[in-house]
Image 1 (cartoon, rainbow, N blue to C red):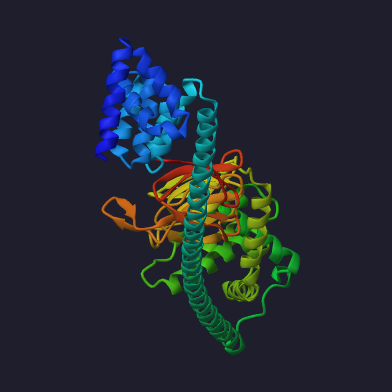
Image 2 (cartoon, helix red, strand yellow; image 1 turned 180 degrees about the vertical axis):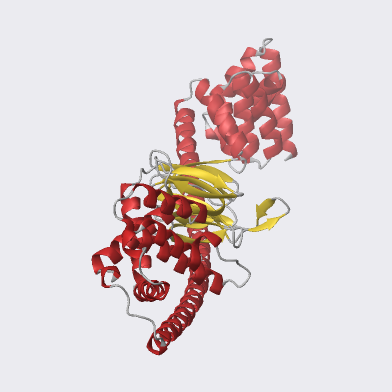
Length: 494
């Protein structure tokens, strides 16, 4: 070892003696490095040239140091050469920094920029590797996103099923309540009809018994009312009641005008008796109601005596028998009154203008036709106009909103604290809401069709009427438009 160092010193000394220029060290370093047998001499010359700052010598000396396992020193010389734009040194640094991808990429790129072709190949290789890694990451993220979306869709479907089940249960409950109410109403009406029939039969039996026991003369044959006269009398009576909204003052006027202007005085008499019977029946049913004096028996008799020549010369007892027989015939056929009311109401409804006119009377609302004839009596707290053959009205009974047809029949019972008019065959209603102060809260909006069936379930905080096939709604803070099947057309977060 000592001899080698001495030998090296001698050689170096000789070299310095033989050359006065540093370039000789570089040349010798380059020349001797290619000869393995002279590697010891090359190391000394290369070290001298490297320390003097020659980039080629710095790169060659770094390789010698790497063979001696002196990595740190080798890197310092390679960095010095790289700083002088030595492409090979840059490439070698990139190889040494294989475990540091950032530095590896940097030095390969530097070597490529310095014209080292294999450096460019390495840059492309690393870029391809980076792209492959990035694609792997993207694929993994896409798989994770798909899993998350699948879980979200499953959760949303479960939520929708739960909401649908709740809605169906609510509809079933409402249907059950509605059927119960209808059943109770039918029972009440049936009981009223039975009681009415009992009263009517009792009254008829009483009258028949009185006639049997009476010694009065038989009624006048000329005043035995025919079926044609019966129907005409009831028809006139129903028409006048509908026109005047059951005003006895109007009925009184009709009788007076009839006796004054009609040539068929018997028809006026029949109408007068029918009005008298109706007045007595209503007073019997409502004990607090007084009979109308114009239609008491004495006044009816006097008007007949004064206006009908055939009655003026008969005894009072025979007139009373005639009056009693006529009253019995009218009472026995009183069912014609309800039948003709229905026929007239249907006829007027069919002829009615779809835009029926609202009118108010004593704080309640009803509807008339274009001529002012009352078609639907004023019995509602508030009403809307008719659209699609339906009007939204507020019941005087429970202060809730429902829908009626042009005949005044309930299509949807009053059960909503808020409801809108029909538009394009659908109407928005506020289901399960209740009044809190002056606001209706606690419910959801949905849409009914003209038969009262749900088309779009009540799930919205707000809902507007349909126009051009779509309606603006708010669902859990999301505002958008739905079609007439409840499908979203578009939506925005608010």
